[in-house]
Image 1 (cartoon, rainbow, N blue to C red):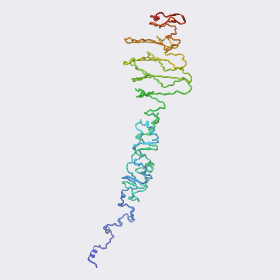
Image 2: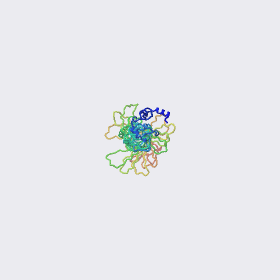
Image 3: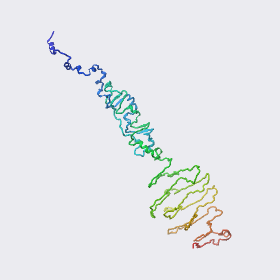
Image 4: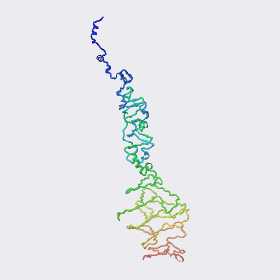
Length: 524
């Protein structure tokens, strides 16, 4: 039965209706083949070739094969260009680029930097304005962020070819599940060509170098190679230098300075323990040995000083004084013996003969010149008392003694004090009044000293020799005593006064045991 409803439906169908024409297809929300530019790809659609919303990361958020800038970190459980970066221990951002950078820790090495052994030379380098432990390049930059590339990874353009979005590394970063190889660079660095991987690089935090470091630039602004040439040209290098803490010199030391008030060498050595024996501020040990035949007289010893003065400018009230050696010893403690100079000379000849031994030898010479010399002393010795609080028991301006050991051999002659005025052959009449020995007692005070004083005093102690003289003048010359001459006690059997060669004609002691010669002045 054909109803009114069916009639109504037919009324709505257009004449010669075509359900596949463009108008009907578009109205239905579909696409005509002519509207699809990649119709073949659509007909060959494979869901594995495209990312879906369920797969998380779309292609526009992936890293293209042509490279680009990563916006996040990269992690992987495999390798980059065959290197397991995570296992290498030191990542690239913590390593020192070849272009240089700032180290954040110390560097140690068992080799050299630019051929220079820094550790050995540290003693010398420490005196320069830069030291080796700060010598790191400041040029270049540090890896502190993600890796970017303008090329491919393992030769594949990830964004453009068959790797789907869910298998691609997002720009925001992520964990790699496989190795990365490249025929180009990371941030301009050819990782494979660089040769040094992260595990073989020096971390910024410092570490131990296992090989030499060379550079065409500087360390902390210091050109180590250039500085090394300067250090090498010095007479001592760090391994041959004397530490400030002291040590032993194995070569000669020359100090050449001018106009230094404290002297070329000043030694300050304090001793605060008086119980330490044989302690001196300066010690010199020298051993003279060998058996080389001498071709002339040779002088060798412990200390040699050659002092030359050509200075002028002084006058009679502002004098310039020259000292070969100046000693100032001041003892305010309870020292038993105090010496300005102590000389102890001992000879023990094992062969040949030692002609003379001097405990001290002094020589003073007036060698002429345009000026004049007032007085020449071979030796001047003064004993002086400036003690207002206690007494001085004895004073000797000069004290001389000859002595021997109990088992000593024969001694030909002994003279404690010897004086001589020598007028050399060919001399003219140049001497005035001459005295081999002279004694003065000079009291410039107004008070006479209540004591007994002798210009010359002699005494025999112990057993006297077989022939003893108080005074013996060998030459037949007058002997002058302006004052009285008094002898000791005599007796009737021994001549108080005798004459050499005439034992029969003697003058015997008078009853009062005294013979005096009064006022016999031969100078008149």
